Length: 233
Image (cartoon, rainbow, N blue to C red):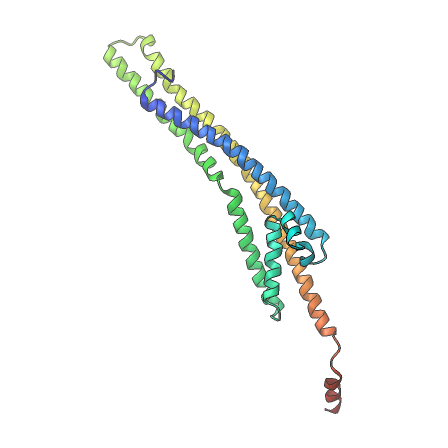
């Protein structure tokens, strides 16, 4: 049926077949990427839970590279901002760290969703592309009827069958794309929830460290000369 179809219908069928191949390629590549990213995020969250401070969670360069991932980048961004803002108010540090964490989360979200938009495009357009091939093929069949001056079903049936094949291929391309896109959407939502959990843990560590530093400054003994001056006054 494909070989006997019109050139336009052949182009439609070929394009839909290519779209189906792209769909399953994205399924394999993006599925592995999301699974690996979620595993690294869980490992990073577990490390943050077990650590006493951000510096302990980050570790040295080699250890940081081993656990890595966006959660490690969250911790490093917070620690870098805390170090650059030494001596400034705690509220300002927290605000700047929150902005930095939001940027890291947004970047990780954009990275993990790359390629899924193509699945949505295939799922929404493939049925209509197949329908276009069907309409074109049926139109050619009716033209053949007028040229043959006969309504014999044996004359028009092959053309109609070829046209309907385009719709079938369109559905074969669209249905898996929609299902895979929905599965990825749920997985990506779970991944973003993990990143939000990591951000909350980082902010918890940061708040604890800032409060501890402020308590140490308040509890530190004052110089003897300062005490004598206050007594004289």
